[in-house]
Length: 220
Image (cartoon, rainbow, N blue to C red; front, top):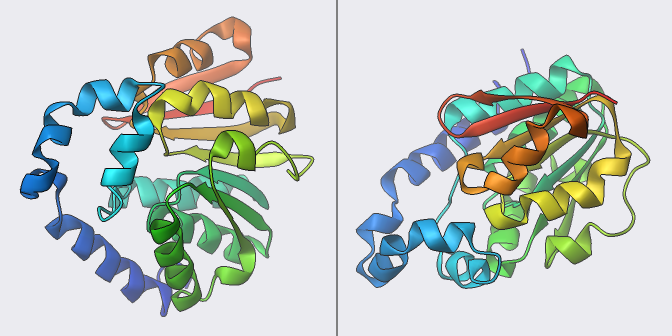
């Protein structure tokens, strides 16, 4: 038995995923203009704040498969130091923290600029019995991840504003040892990021996973 598959976390995740399945930005008339301009906004380095602020009531959750992948990757590399960019309601955070628990402990730093989402994530972490493993940072990741980072980061999840993926990676890169993993959700919206991790000269081995996830490993 694992933390991921037993109470209190398993039923909590089931409820959160079921809730995410029933809610879609496309069903909210107030977000119609946003949805029509989604591709541009998600790729923009200047307008992403408006997009995500207006999406604050939407879970924007990872898929069940991606959640399971995060748990398996963190377990398989015996991660004890994880950084997450983009907390939302904390579904991915719960998977990563569960892996830390089953690895024997560790530290997960997660950062989110929407206060209401971070509050929900904190409540979910408490309900799942994992709050003691997670440090929640509120604000712009380009500021919150500039200091007080572990000497080595074993795994990174990028799931915030897609246009910022290259900048966030740059903040963390000198803490990534050979074998460290980076998971980028919706990576197709971050072409500059993909160009970097897929360039053999940049020190990564990178492959697409499923439809919209990029899995990269630091080589040196």
